[in-house]
Every structure is written in C-alpha cells, then in structure tokens.
Image (cartoon, rainbow, N blue to C red; front, side, top):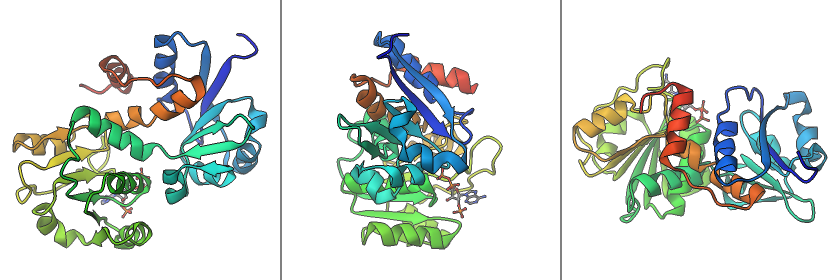
Length: 282
Ligand code: ATR
C-alpha cells in the first residue's frame, strides 16, 4: 500500500452489518483505483471526539451510519442542504483546507433509484403519500420536495412524529392519521413505504390498495425481501413498482465521487453482488 493511498470507511455502532465496503470495494476494483474502504466501529462515548478531530483519522472521508449521523453533522464545518435540513450527515469528506464537510445523501439515493428504474416518475410532480416518520421518511420527504411535489402526506403509527416532520418541512408536507389512509390513497401519484413493516422478521404491512390509481408508482425502502408484499400486491393490480435496494446503492455514489474522483454507476452486477450477500432472491 502506498503512503498516499486514499482511505475511507463506514463509521457507526455497530458497523458489522454494513454492506458499504462491498459497494465501494466493487467500484474501486471496477475503476482500477488503488484505494481502501473499510469498517470502523466508533463507540458512542468516543464519537464526538472522533468526528470533531476527523482529520486525525487518516481517512479522506467516511460514511456515517446509526447512531452517529447527528453527532457527525454537528461536527462539520460545512453541510449540504439536505444535511442541514435533516440535522444528520451520512457522508463526510475533508476539503483542501482540511475542513470537514458533510452531506446527507439518503434523499439523493431515493431519487437516483427512481430516476434509474422509473424514468419520468416525477414529471407530473403531483401528490405523494409517505408511510412512516423515521430518519428514512425525513430523507424521502426532503427528496420529494426537491422535485416539486405539490403535497407530501405522512402517515405514521405515532402521529406526533409525522406532525413534527410536517412542521419542519413546511406547508406542502401534511401529517395525517391512519384512518385517512384509504382517502389519501385515492388522491396520490406515489406511495412510499419507509416503515420497517414488511421486512423479513417484522410484522407485515397490511394495506388495502384498492383506492389507489393504477398509474400510481409504489416503492418500498425495505429491500429484504426485495419484493415486499406491498410491491407484490401493487404489481399484481398493475401499478408500476420500484424496490428499495437501489436507494442503498445510489446513496453511496456521491461519497465515492468525493473521495476517489470518479462518479460510479449502479449497475446490475453491483445489484446482484449485494443481493447475493444479503441472501435475497432477485
Ligand atoms: P428509520 O430511521 O430507518 O426510518 P425508524 O426511525 O426506526 O427507522 O423508523 C421506523 C418507522 O417504522 C417508524 O415510522 C415507525 O413508527 P413509529 O414512529 O410509530 O415508531 C414504523 N414502525 C415500526 N414498527 C411498526 C409497527 N409495528 N407498526 C407501525 N409502524 C411501525
């Protein structure tokens, strides 16, 4: 390994489950770049110090996963719009002056996935319904507003969390109750599940899609299984669907470009590599 070998890592606690090294390793190999991307566990009691003195880590940048996205954002000298809005950063890099810069690319990952697998999906920029109100929902709401959706409804088990996101993002974002699900399904052009329901080992997402227009796009951020019951049900009645794996892959693109200087592509070979590692059927 040469002394100027660029090194990046995924930081979090835990990090063992992260597929990021596989994704970046694939791109490093594909582009013949002599770089390194590893897993770096950062314990909660050392996280603030680690990110505040990121320059001492020897890394050119990092991905940040749970539970450090907020601490990382707070340690940055500069944040992109999404990270500023969400108060959370998942991608870090040092600029030429050694300042720590942060971005939140989860929303870009959501957009990149739909742009690739459902081109033109945002042409009408109509109304969307987001199920869930966690960190992923925040990123999705940010993404939809960036593409000028006229209304983004949020329904969540805990109504207060949906209301909090609506308050943060302004008047186009509207929190609603589960009781309104049927009515809202009849109005929207896009349905997004950001809850963990439907994931292998979790409760199913039980939803009656009959009020939904058959032209509405249905997407799920769950990718284990790849074809969730929601996507299967939507596809069976003729709705276009997009699975959630691409969000994971596309959110990695901006970091790789910052650290290693090449904008990588999300291709079938990468998808298949990750699916195989996850033990998920395509
Ligand atoms: P992430 O940051 O990945 O979005 P999260 O913050 O844990 O993850 O959010 C998970 C989402 O799934 C939340 O909207 C959660 O609802 P609550 O805010 O009410 O907790 C939703 N969720 C998880 N289990 C659920 C269940 N059994 N029924 C309904 N919603 C559920």
